[in-house]
Amino acid sequence: MKQNKFPPGWDEDRVQSIIIHYEQQTEDEAVAEDEAAFQDDSSTLMAIPTELVPVVLELIDKHIAASVVANSE
Image 1 (tube, helix red, strand yellow):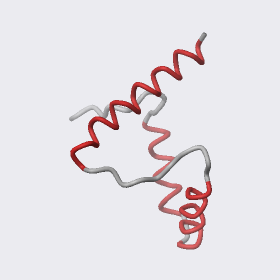
Image 2: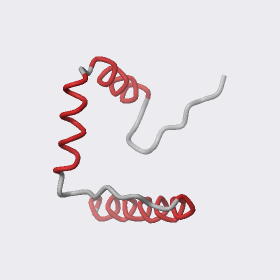
Image 3: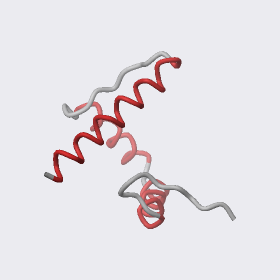
Image 4: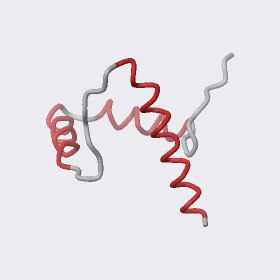
């Protein structure tokens, strides 16, 4: 059996709780959650050309790693 690999801070319990959250969510709750995401000033949603996705993901990983280091100091 293949062992699942989770990102740092994630485990099977967290994944299962997220699955349950979305399975139990009503359509109105889902719409409200989506709309709230567009109001969040701490992040930006944008279209990225497919060929640039790996580069953007690498930059995000570097940003997260730098944040983890800064928060542990």
